[in-house]
Amino acid sequence: MLITQRHKAYWKRTLRITGILLALWFVVTFVVSYFAHELSKFSLFGIPFGFYMGSQGALLIYLFIIWIYVKYMNALDREFGVSEGED
Image (cartoon, rainbow, N blue to C red):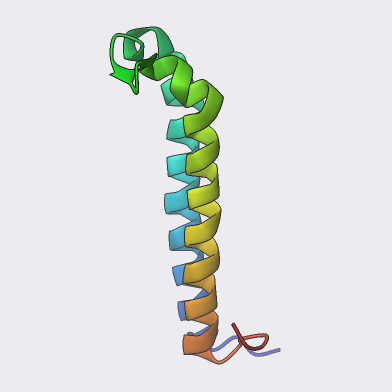
């Protein structure tokens, strides 16, 4: 199969969004956990922020990451004409 400039553009944009979202995942998973004690000085809804991020906040951000990825990739698929069907 011949790889065209269109294939390269699609792959470049896919890698860019994947890299950005993986960096966000890394920050939420490891950086926030590492600084949990310091973050607990702040509170969110009366709950220490470090505890909140560990118990609920990270899960909400993971769902947001998945939602962003799905929306972006569906739009990218439509733009490049490789959509699998109706959205």
